[in-house]
Length: 323
Image: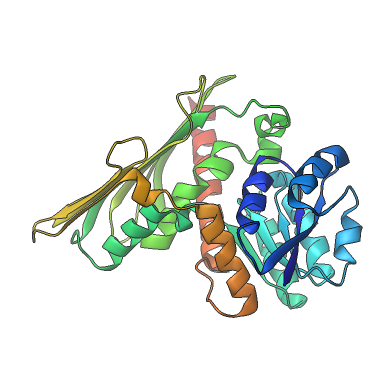
């Protein structure tokens, strides 16, 4: 039995807890949260211990790994403590709020012979994996135009106040479109930013980033925290190449469509795409800890994605100051 502790008892921790409960060889032993009552509510559903004291987990020899589901500004400190305690680590995205801090996290994990995996869940969504396969097989020829977008209601629930403070969340660039930037790095390598713009109102934030890859496609990334709930997360990927296209829109009746000039095509329904990505992600990380799989996400890719997000944010800030 693989014993794990979850640090943080918020929304993302609920998703991780649900995923672990489906694994017969994994046991959630402890849930940690500064709000111990919230931790207890989650722990009751899992039949495990709850505590507000992280040191209880870090000094528990039975716990092999910790899953950090904390606000972004707490990642560095918590990873450092867990690494020094000899625990393997899963940490929600973004790894950290600066490249320097992310590098520190990986360095201390290597020094203490533990592994750190950053949870970029889109890599485990069926649609994104299908697109990756289409690109690997060069089924659309040379990709020339890539358009990625995502939108969701501005984070306003109780306990989400920290999102409003960019020094704690990293804002749209580091917390939200980090998924799309990770997709770009995964499929095309580190891009160059052509332009980046930010719209920032009290309850509406939006960004548009134009990028290019040497010898690769022109790319546009659009992210919005909307002023009103439009029905949950909306995410899209559209790729047009010299020999075909692949498009994904999670709100379409037929979300995934691929066609090319050779007559190949594939269309996938919502039901086909509805595999729990959090289960697939965390199952993969557990298997990597055990040495039965190789990590799908590398340290280098995590750093490159974070670098791109920070560069885009700085360019947008500079543009805003000069206008």
